[in-house]
Length: 497
Image (tube, rainbow, N blue to C red):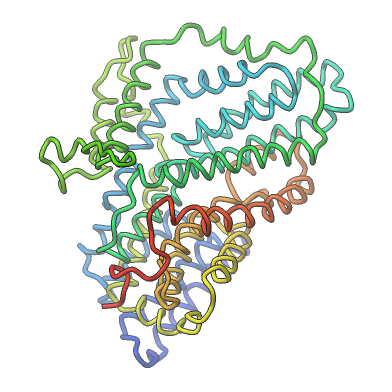
């Protein structure tokens, strides 16, 4: 509580001091005021002086008061395409949860892999990642935790053995870490991804858009790379060996309790597949020398359909389609339980970025960072990843991405490199907090299982952070740019005007 009060007054003091200071040469007064807002929101987000969702509303009051942006221009960020898209995806996730489709998928995958302890850890990770593609990582961890605990309890009752001494710990951490990693797979999986695309669009309006399909080309390989590495590390670190006890039938029992696949499950799966198809096939798909025309162009709506349009269409179908039991696939009562506050954090990040651009703070900051121009791209990328991986362990990942992305965009422009070379890896790194219990929601969730100690999480997470640092450098420096077809040099759309 004391930390929050200190953060509250320190944030206000920093804001007042910066507002009263004369603007440095080359920076407008509005740019100075924007820097004051950034300082205030950063301190409040880091210290949680007030709820993090409420901090996101600061620009709505301060921007018009200091003539940074008009009320309408500020408020439009909270109704941004991507903010509304994220809200629609929350409705889809709630429908999947209500119909228990996520539980059936997870249990079926785990059941398929058998009772070998190593396979159980791997199958649990695969199931967790697949669910986390579509559902918030905390919800995924909460859903998978009782399944993992039931398996661990049955194994302990059957005697465990030397190979199962730390099996429960490995399983709990596998759930936590993979719930986070799965969120890297799709554009809609975690708030940090959506914050990135909106900030990127605000800072560089002339840049090619980051589409759902474009994200998949990087996100899925990252997940496919991380899961086997993480699995191998966990089973070796905790010396997981052998098979579960012969009386373990918890997975089959859970599947039988679910009964046959319901009409509601099938229909939610159909709507989800329809939305994914709409996102992936929206634009032209180049398959070597052959190109499949996007459906938006075929129906004459090119330039009028956004990914958020498809998401909202799917949400409307969910509210309209019956579940076969006299209800709809999702009701408004259920929809009202989605984390609306997260959507506001996304909007707050977009508002910060809009202030950076309109006040000239972004261009001025780029000029102050001109010393990085002589540094190699590899060195800058390595430094950025190391800093973000450390910073996000002690700060909310949504706050981290909101604070750092505009600065990294200016750094990239100053270094004459493609902004995506820094912004995209930093976004991924913001979600890779494996060491501190409070760093991510899934870490906190599994700590409550009482099968993981804080010291175990910190020691294991420290090594995983080092592994993550190496993997992200390799993936983004040698793989991501060629796959996305991007040039490493500063593109024309990112050049200061």
